[in-house]
Image (tube, rainbow over all chains, first blue to last red):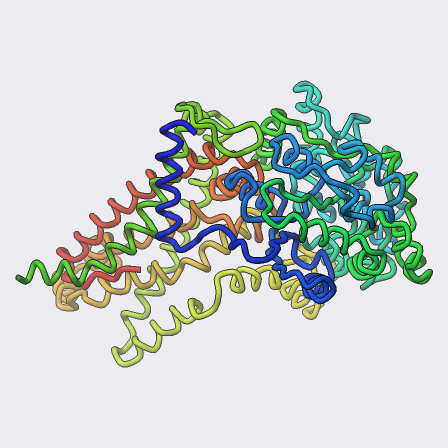
Length: 350
Length: 287
């Protein structure tokens, strides 16, 4: 720490004390996850099964928890749920614990494909929790012909204009453009970024809205007829209206993976390992698949799913082999800033 | 000893203001002079590049666009609010408290809920469309939501009471004899309004308008919800820097410019309120 840094940190600490916001207390395990992303009784159940006290805190986005972890040097949390590019960042920053598989015997439940993921072959610092694709979710009773390409979203037919939405999060918004142009979802070349930006600005003029959270509800109400969606969230629409369908466009999808990471700074490593292991138990992990309708990379958990579920929600049946055929979003390092700027340019375009 | 007593009485408010307003603002502003770390976070090397970036055509353009939206919202709110305040002030005295009560009634519900209510009204399958269909309209549903108009409507709706309150006070305190004298001297109603009433209540209008402008330009919820993420205002840009781009220094630099702009305008507003107080012997109505 330089002197300037110390002064600043001291000032921040003062302000923190005055505001009464210390870091999370070190009593018991602190887990951070998205709201509703695991069983409501997952934490209580863990405490009941193992006797370890644990507390769940919530983050709304990857970036929110990353901001906290980077600011605190990984202190104050023991286990965090983040998407794979962010797990990579935690590892690059030296904040992620190098995993001792002997302490997570249930890692044997993972599909072999889930142990060779590009961001972390061998699960050295992250364990996958859920995985899936990003594609088009649409009203099969209103959209004809059925969409087959990302360009059906980026250059919609006249009938669909004003009735489509795209994801607002930088990486997925850009991914739609990259995939439509046959590029890598991790492309960083400035010329190609500019090309994708222009295509997405043109697409913006035909959009109803950018939407990360309520797109399936817009499909159900009929306000939108085709949306860019994560497969699991499309299922929430299908649950309310069976005419809603999901398709992976012919140019492909990204493979997104949400992971569990143990923080190196954790003072409760024993408990943290026990928690990750508990989640990977087939019956616990199955809860996520059955109730959140996201695919989980847990072989016995998926095998135990009722057949009606995969019949009603066909994307639950996408195989690990198919998933591995898609490129994962990776940490793009310094290009993250270029991505943010391109997205600002798209959002500011009139 | 009176001075000491005022100091003691003011101490809780001053400590509150210092700890929760001055210190956090100072910390945020200090961030603007450091470099962003590769993975977010802050590198403690001094730089002016964040402030320079604010004036990059892209970001300056977003600033100007925000100024335009906030300016339009302020103008429309002043137009509607002044007329409403004028009407209330012209009502018999005994009805006025009840009418003012109705004006502030929406503040009893949460800002987000009031904004969501507009989504329910304006969306393509919303109440307005359903109403039109009931009346026999058969055509394509109108696109009302997720437009710039929807954003401005939301801002005007939420901040209108501020204008009504700010302009009602000088209007109500206006000495009716001045207007009578003007009529006696042969001025028409319109001339009396233009030459007497308007100038005397102008400071209140300016104060109300600035209030709406300042609240609107920093707003990020309304453009996010009613604009469908398609209209980026400066508040959304600041939000994105802190919560998605993890570029705290640039977010701080943007906030710094925004705070400077707001401070300048609020000083103008104070000036206008002071004139209103002097000019029409109106009581100040803050907030």
